[in-house]
Length: 147
Ligand code: SME
Image 1 (cartoon, rainbow, N blue to C red):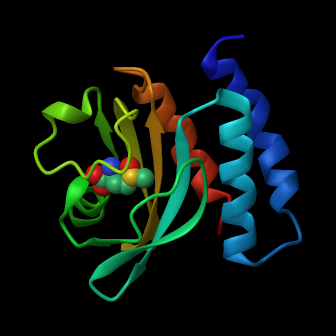
Image 2 (image 1 turned 135 degrees about the vertical axis):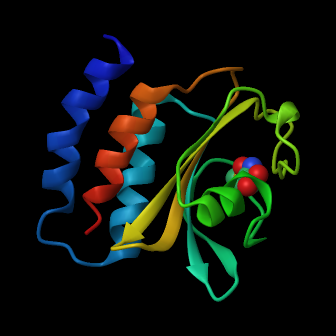
Image 3 (image 1 turned 90 degrees about the horizontal axis):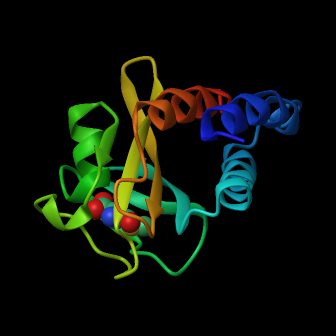
């Protein structure tokens, strides 16, 4: 199955998984689990905005850095720019924060409430150039299920 078809299959099941549960942390935890299990990404997780930092939230994968300042790394940059960032090769992203040497490419999707960024979904792959606009499109739809 193509990744796009996997996303299409996943969307309704994520919606029903989250249905009836308002706790954001629990819902983030299940989204991270579903994405990790389905696609086998190296690291899948959330960071939540807390003051001028992002604080590590629910994730699946190896230990990660706990706090990221506004504008720092890929995650802090996506927060600052208020847009998704796709990094085909993490070594070429200036200021990239390496939590694991195995991570080769990355995508970060901001979570919004109106115009305000509440946090980000961060996914790392052990393969170079593993993310494109298809991932951005469907991951954006998936994080919208959190509202
Ligand atoms: N690479 C991220 C840091 C978080 S870890 O990848 C889990 C960044 O540059 O913001």
